[in-house]
Image: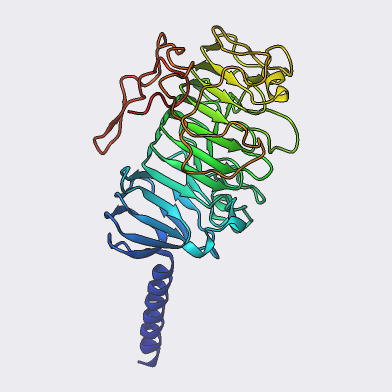
Amino acid sequence: MKFNQILTALALTAIVFTGCEKANIDVDTTPINGSAIGEVSGVWTKGSVHEIKGDIIIPQGQSLTIEEGVTVLMDVTAKPEIVVKGNLYSLGTAANPVKFTVSDAYRTDANKFGKLWGGILAAPTCAELVLDNTILEYGGATTSDASTSVKMGLYKAVAGENLPALWFSNINGKLIVQNSTIRNFQEDCTYIEGGKIIFANNVFYTTGVSGGEAMNFKSGCLADVAYNLVYSTNTNALKLSNTGDRTPQAYIIAYNNTMVNTGWRRPTAKGGSVWLEATVRADLYNNLFANTRFGVKRDPKKPEDTRSKYTNNWYYGFDQTTVDQFQPGKNDVVGGTNDVISKTAGANDPKFVNYPLSTPTSNADYNTSWDFHLPGNSPALGKGTTAFTRHHKAGLTTANGFTYVSPEPATFVGAYGVKL
C-alpha cells in the first residue's frame, strides 16, 4: 500500500513539475495585451501590447499574424530573439504601424545603435514573412553561446555575432518588406540568404557602429528593391553578393532608391553606396546617390556577373572629395549608361524639398522633418527609365490571401518624385 502511495506521489510530482516547466517555456496566447516567452502563434489583435520576456519561436507549420497598431515590447535584460520557423505576418498601416521596440526609458541617444534585443531570425523552414508598415528599432544584440539562434544553428550560428534586424534564409520562401522603417541597430539591417523578395518604400537610418549595410543580399535571392531611402548606414546601402553558391544565382533589380551620406562612418574604406561581388547579377536603374562615400563599387578580385546593368543613375557630391570618389575607373567604381555624374563639386543638385546638402557626411542622426521629395524644378525629374522588367511584376501571393506587387518604376530618379 505504501509503495503504491509513493508511486502515486511521484507521478503527481512529475505532472506538477511538467506543468511548471510548460508554463515557463510557453506563452500567453491571448490575442489582447499579454506577455510572451517560448512558442507563439495565432493573432495579436489591433492595438494590443505584447511584452516579450525571452526568446519566442513561431513553430514550423504555424503562423503569427500581428495586426495594426500592435506594440511588441522587448525586455532589455533578456534581449530576446524572435525565431520564425513558421510564418510571420506583421500587418500595420501608415496611421497605425506595428512596432518592435523597447520601453520609452531606453529609447535614448546613449542607445542610439540599439543592442537591446536580438532580431527577427527566419529559419529555412519559414515559408513566408511579411513586414508591412512595421517599425524595427533598438535591436542588434550580440550572440552568446546561450543564444537560441546559436543553439539552433541559425544565422551565423556562433557567439559574438551582432544580429541583424532581419535574417531570412529560405530560397523557396517569400519575403516582403514594404512601407517599413528599420533604425537604431548595431550592424546590418537585413541579411538575406535566399527567397523571392520585395523591398519597397522603406526607410533605413542610424544603423551600424563599425560596419553594416541596410540591405545585404546573398545567393538564392531574386529581389526587387525599389523606392527605399537609406540614410547614413555605416557601410553600404546595398551589399549585393552571390556568396553561398545557392540556387538560384542572386539577381537583384534595384531601382528608384535614394542613398544619402552612406559609407562614411566605416573605419576602413570598402563600399559606400552599392557593393558588388562574387558573380552577383545586379541591375541598377534610376538610383540617386547624394554625398555617398563612393559610387557603385565592385570587388576587383570577385567581380559581379557580366550581364549586370547600370543605367540612369544620378550622382551629387557637396564637396570635391566626394565627387572624386564617384568617378568610374577609380577605386573600382563602376560607371553606367546614361548616368548623370559630374567632376565638379555641387553639380547635379537634385534640390531636395528639405534637406541641407551641407550636412556632415559623418552625421548619423536622422531628422524626421527632412523631406527627400523633388520639387517641380528638380533636374532629376524625367531622367529615369522604365524600359526594364522586374522580377515580381505579377506579384507574390501569400497563404493568407494577400498579393504583393513590386512597384512600377518611375521616370524620375530616386525614391521620391514631386510630392502630391
